[in-house]
Image 1 (cartoon, rainbow, N blue to C red):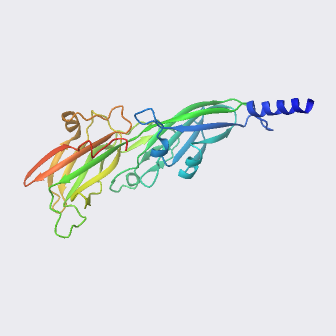
Image 2: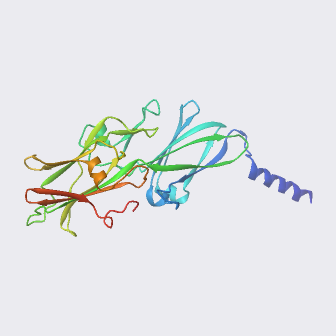
Image 3: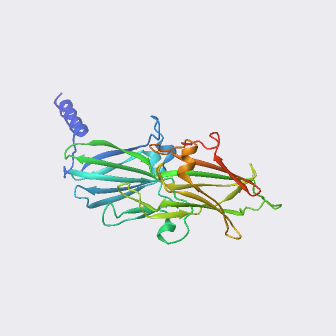
Length: 290
């Protein structure tokens, strides 16, 4: 009977406290969550990699952890082994081939952007970036469970060019180039988007299924009230064919990105001889959140 009581007490301590030589190093389970614009958990569908940065209460960098898809599939989160104290957690989701994280001396100096921005080359896109942060307090002798909630740091752009001559060879080279100008160049670790403006030059490809040229790419977030412009040029002569202020297009077509995580802007451009007509991409073609 005494053995049973002792075993029960040991089990109770194991569940409610930390049995370690150093009681300051108690495990904290940190889960990741992303709900998009709804109430259903869609983190596994949207985020395949997490770069996690941990700072102490003085904003001094403590450690970095990178979790890939395999690790995230096994557990939608991670386990922290840190001394008791207050910590600031910063997470970036989907920092893949089209993202570079420049780690600076402070949260404001840590910059995230397209790799070609930092190498002064033409930017075509960035990854579908997501941002999460959390303040946590770890108390010794106890386990803790907490959650980092993610939000979107990007906007999906989809542009379709209709009426262009695809040629007899169905070549993949578009006769028209696309420029999206006055976009934010970077975002920092406080999710503040830079006031420095850059242009994106997305890759334009030919879709044989619909026999049209088009482009799908990501940009860092902007608001409805923006300075972004879309410019089309003749690829051979570099002659400007058309320029449009995105803010006016969005207003005229009741398109909004403010407060929307899975924000997307779809533009369909018709070439009819010398005339160019611009309309929103049909909703059945562009579906935010997919």
